[in-house]
Image (cartoon, rainbow, N blue to C red):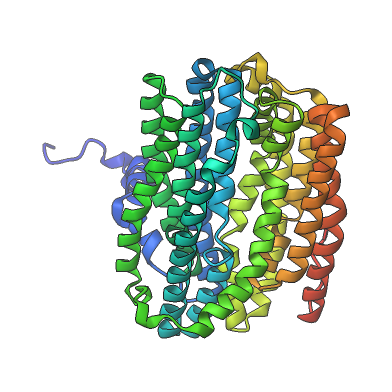
Length: 485
């Protein structure tokens, strides 16, 4: 029969249903992806998990791009810069990281805490007052910092600070540092962006902008390396491009959250006081964190010479990767903890802490073992034989990262619930231990001594102080402490 379907007898439900490719295409369509980002869940607790999951997923993509930039920057720059100039570049990069974190606590977790609290109370007027107070306070700090930099720049012997030889010209070094300081000053009022996105549990938007910023930085880095640009051009490629994207991001952000527009009339002295009070505590934690995570390049430069910085920094970037990934996965819970506290949803807080701890351990430990076992061949391929670390350096850096993975969720919960005092105490003591042990042990044990001091300092400060506070919190809310804590 001409009208009969020759495959009619084979028209089973499996063949009649859409193909797997069609289903995949449907689920990856623009409409479906848009729904994931825009459709909220009626259950508040599940909505927090949804937003945290989206933010963590986008964080991994942003981090992957950061890793790509780090990986590419080594072969792109180390060969034509040479060991000393590349060591200076790594030290300047470390300074840029220091400076990006130094916001006097106003644009970091303090702003996240107060905005998450106003969000939980649905108080938009209060949110604008905190936003305006933070913006204008940071702008004032930017002006003061700029004046200080201008008046003291010529007084600092930069060649002695970086211990450079004739291979690095004075003009090149000073220009690179001047540009670094300029972007440091500019960053103060621009540093609110991630905090505002995080406070409203829209951290994925910050990550999307970060991906765009890092992509532009990568293009600029490739261009500078192809033209064999010096240290100033490298600073412009990374910091300059990111600052330009940050300005565009500001325009978008205040259009999205129009109630946060920082008009001067919304500034309130009580908001400034609370931000400075809470931010001052977070400033202590920031400075301590700089000592823990970013002091090594400067210490190595002074104690062992800039050429040794390459070995340590490259090894640290590899070994600390699992810890960084756990941090990115759990960081979105900070604002969720704060918003849940404003609603007295302590049951969700206890469950979220347990889940975050278990997920960090389940993902972090196997990943860390894999990274530690493959670190030397990966580094040899990536950065060359001059950057390959010793087995003992890899071992102690791995122990240091393992401690960080185990305690990651505890730190995030303490920040979200504004338990800043015990957090600050543990960080300050750890920073003092890291710096003192590096100075004491590096002349005899070299880079291994520095890594050993980092691991021991973290375990004897973080573990007893932070875990004691977590136990106290969970007992106060009537629940048991999760296994391993």
